[in-house]
Length: 263
Image (tube, rainbow, N blue to C red):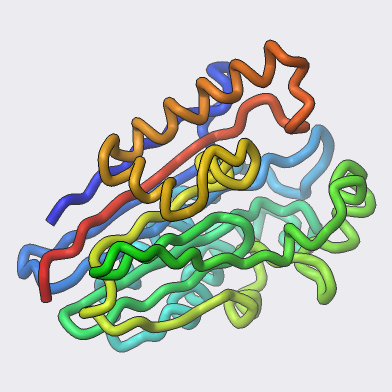
């Protein structure tokens, strides 16, 4: 089994708010991938005394532990329990009802000898490659449906955050787990998988260097770090051209790639 992860901060002056982990039990019959993209809060009050990395570390750790130790729990229940556990860790010190309380996108994947389960919440991406080489992208596209001019307004974005008709993230409400995109694929139909935060998926959905199959091929040949370096090269070239294709210069970028053993 091949498993690789890589993560690059968007700026050397700011901590990386992404979080990623893979687990490969000694039995070799299964494993998990957990990938989070913490949402950078705007300058101002978010009702919380903690940083986004504090939040993603807590939530990521809970997701990793529960998805590994509780194979009986469906992934939405695991996300719900992890959100509740994380919220309990700062419920007495912070205003968790604040619309900008620390939050994150989620990709959670778990597999065993018979199936591959997945959960995606918000705009991180999961890629599933079949034995014939075709690649399926699992996306939660609700944020993509929001016009960019709306997202440039903090007040307008807040009105859509974790609201019907808007988009959903893992914050402090365990019920949001019911909004995630979920599914199960027979183990025999998945040869490899990859998870990308939106800082890494820019290679496809912002710069248009290829489709998801092309992106997966880069991951197979060059590994996650190779993909992230390609993204940084594109960002640098775009900056020289005036940065017309993005509103955020660089973003934290994280990718995980796993080749599963033959079932």
